[in-house]
Image (tube, rainbow, N blue to C red; front, side, top):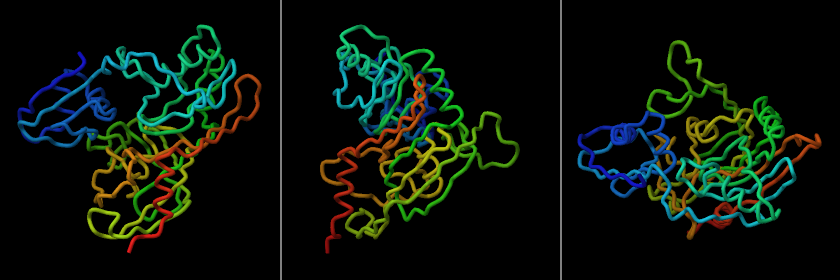
Length: 326
C-alpha cells in the first residue's frame, strides 16, 4: 500500500481523525504520519494532525515510502565526521529520516550510513545501532553505536543526560535568555504533543523536560520581510538540552511564543507574519544540531564535535546581516 486517496465525508474532522478512519490505525500512528509529511489535503502537506478539514477535500496518504527510493544510497564520506570500531557520528542533512519509518522505507540515515561503511571498510558490516534521533528536517550531528556494549554505554549516557547537545535555531520574535522546564505529554489537550498545563494529577507518562535557551543575536526586520506588512523580529538562539524528549526544542520555543522559523506543527495560535525566505532556500524547521559531546564507550576519552552551519542557515545569516532595504 504505497498511496491511499479518499474524499473527506464530513466537515470539521481533524486530519488525524480522517487518517485514523481511512487506514484503521491507532491515533499515535495517524498523528505520526502527519508529522512525517506523509499526509496531504488538496495537494498541500498536512503536518498538523489537529487541523480541521472540510467536507469534499481530497486526502492523500503515503503510509510507506515510494518504491523509487529503494536504490541503495550512501553518504558523501565527508558527512561521516567520526568513526572507529565502536562509534560513528554523521552530519545529517535535512529531509532525511534518522531511521526507516516502516518495512518498505529504503532511504534513511541508517541505511545510507550502512552502505557507506561497507564501501569504506570493504566488508559487510551490520547496520549501526540507534541511540538517539534527529527530526527529519533537523540537520547536524547524530551518533550511532557499532557494537552492543557501545550501544548500552551510549544509551546510559543519554539516559542520565550526560551527553552534551547544543542546537542552533532561528526563532520568531524577540527571544530572551531563559530556561524552560515542563512536563511533556503525548497529548497536551489539543491532540498535539506538548507541556501538561491542565488541572489535576499529571499523567505518569509525562516526562520532565528542560531546555536552556541563550541568545546569540536579534534582528529587527523591515516590513518588507513579512507578508503581513509589519516589522518583526527574528532571533538566533542556542539551545542546550538537559533532557532530550521528542520535539522538545520545537515545543518549548513554540509554547514560549517563539516558534522556530519553518515550524509546521507546534505553531498553533501563533500569528504567522508570513516571513519571506531567502531566495533559493527550501523552507524547513530552522534547527541545527551544532555540537555533540560524549564519553567514548571504549576508551573513556571525551569526544566533542562541532558541525558547520548548512547552506540554508548560511543564507539566513547573509540575509539578516545585509542592510534593510529602504
